[in-house]
Image (cartoon, rainbow, N blue to C red; front, side):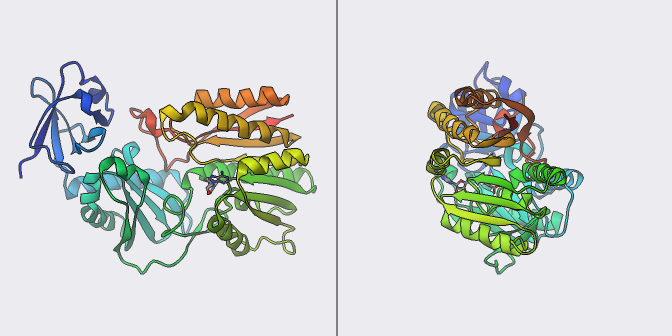
Length: 406
Ligand code: SAH
């Protein structure tokens, strides 16, 4: 089959030259032989080569660019891109046994529409677009070549596939059988449910921030033996509270709306041997709406030394940014009211539609209403296995602040 061609309108090629990987229908003048889920050569109005990418007329983003060079996208290309991604992680992450990290971060590793996460000896592939969906077995073969991966599972059960005209898909691609949970080690040990857990099973993007909380708790412990109270809101499987453990005399309150998430959190506490007898660690697991739970804490005048606020994406789209902003403000306002003077708030937004600047303004608005004072100790973002392509600002979805509160 001959490769299709997508022509770009005169005056619309600048973003492509600037290496933005998305081409919307409005920029396209004509298409020849372009088939959904297949490669296309992207040319300017004079017919000159601009890039090579893949086509889907059913998506708002009609083409996504794989390369700006006139090169073939075949087995060698997949191996090259995967090797690059592997070497980045090898340089920037300390690999323990049972390591877990994002091996390939889609557009940000220059492979639009593909996510690969690793959990110990399991690799989880997520295909977000039609072309990637059709290339699954070629990708699995290249992944096995480059990493020696034996077990590959697909978790392509995400909303975003609807925009591509695709159904959700999940199942074994290679190896197996997949156990109910896979154990990973990040300093603390966690059980990951690859088949049914959120995302591909774990929030890998928060690794550095969990480590930062761990360091803060360790230092606080070195200063004083007093019991530390941590409120871990939107706790999922206990990520932050488990990272904070091990230094003794910690009480964590873990709140999530999901029962399976909290069950996993409890199992994770047991797995790490965090209990009252050995470490003096105590934990509560509360299934509740975190908005309501915060109100309850404010009413009861509860006080915590550390609060982690890691809500799900409140804005799915730019049009929801205002509503989301009210949600973030509400959460942060309540959180400020609960923090011991000299305590810390770690607050996040993973909405791509809320910029870092806007997020800081929202948190400031909450602070002003709370009558508290706060200092920014650090700007927070995702770990190095979630790089952001400089030409793709959309890639920076996770932003956060570490605040000291008085
Ligand atoms: N901090 C976690 C990740 C949080 S992801 C970690 O480090 O692993 C967001 C979590 O919020 C999910 O576990 C989801 O179940 C939960 N959630 C979504 N809406 C909620 C709500 N209204 N109240 C409480 N939890 C909610």
